Length: 132
Image (cartoon, rainbow, N blue to C red; front, side, top):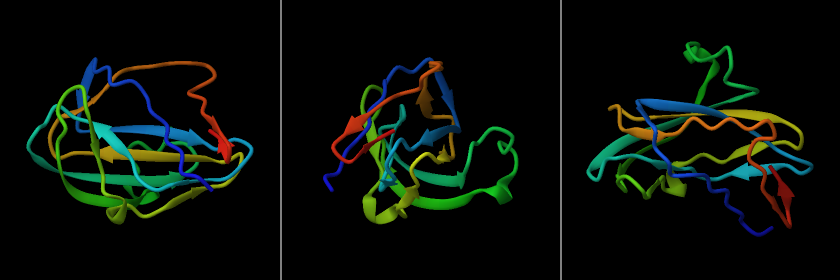
């Protein structure tokens, strides 16, 4: 299968230590092999990524529900550019067809940038190997 990527906005209405979001696999299973994130930092920073089966909703303060899948020291890309996490530092996360998986990206400072985006249908991506 060909690797596919899913991009979202780099708008940055908010800054925080972390962000939680859900990914729902469509008709086919998908593998998440890395995540890029948006930070205002251009210096080195630690990043952690945690995951759990199902939604993050109701588990925002339950650390025992989460499993760490990445920990890396990265060079921040700065506002308007993505900061990648090395794939060798990221444990593959398999999301079975029709299943939901939560992710939590966290930094040691309030430098993770994001925007509030609400859409009833979510973000949709289709490729030759499936959809999200």
